[in-house]
Amino acid sequence: MNCKVLPNDISGTNIIRDAMPLLAIQNLFITFAENDRGNLQPTIFDVSLEINRGEIFAIVGESGSGKSLTTLAIGRLLPPHARIAGKITFADVSLLDLTEKNMRKMRGKRIAYIFQEPMACLNPLRSIGFQICECIRIHNPSLSRTEVGRIAINTLERLHFQNPCDVLRAHAHQLSGGMQQRIGIAMAICNHPQLLIADEPTTAMDGTSERIVLDLLLELQRMDGFALLLVTHNLNIVREIAHRMAVMHHGRLLEFGKPSDIFANPQHEYTRKLSEAFSF
Image (tube, rainbow, N blue to C red; front, side, top):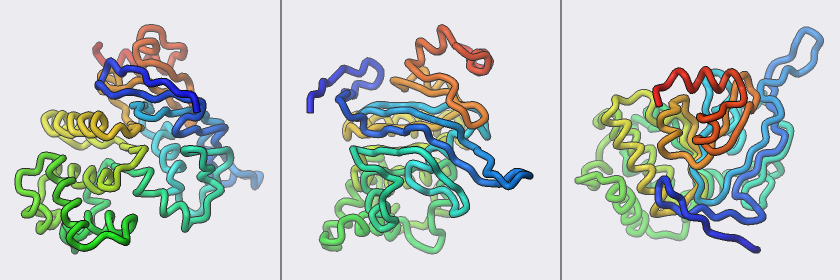
């Protein structure tokens, strides 16, 4: 396959652009409820976008715009009553055509998630070590207990935990909110995914914790070269770290491109209002 490596002047990561993007969403529709005539009422309307290997791609928009629904559809994490139409291709694999068994092999291994509320994803009854090691064992059943533990410790060290063994013995309630989110990142990256989806990972944090988490994500992305799909409403973050961005509103994709181009010349009134809400 012909490809070329382009320098990334934002984070230092090389973006690989070739004939086949890492992720391609084509004509995505998501429906939930029926209207008065008995027809399905779409919530996501005809969304199409592509993400390249090693790229930082941001989806922005206010709450309820469809950002999270779109990313949940990638991992087939929508509730059972949701209906999906369209096509989602990841590394030449049609995700919507996979059996649930094969999708589970993809989820957490090649596609991983970081969510807004880490406590909602952590089991309060299990130690942090048990939960991280479980993530590793599921996708690497041939590894010994010692090898799994070594990977867990190494992962925490990469996230700058000073005493990883103590953290592995701890439970979620014994950690601060910022530390809990770093554990969420550890569980997401321990299997070295190709695509990391971060859904509002810093919304509930103070400015200092937000900066720490963002810097960690960028550091890991530079080292591992995964594509980062960031869901956020913070345009200042997008301007700082994203290579490309998409703007969503009421379930529709309004425009996408380089942040510098969109901020300089927004094509939609909604995008212009979003830009004006932030000081650049």
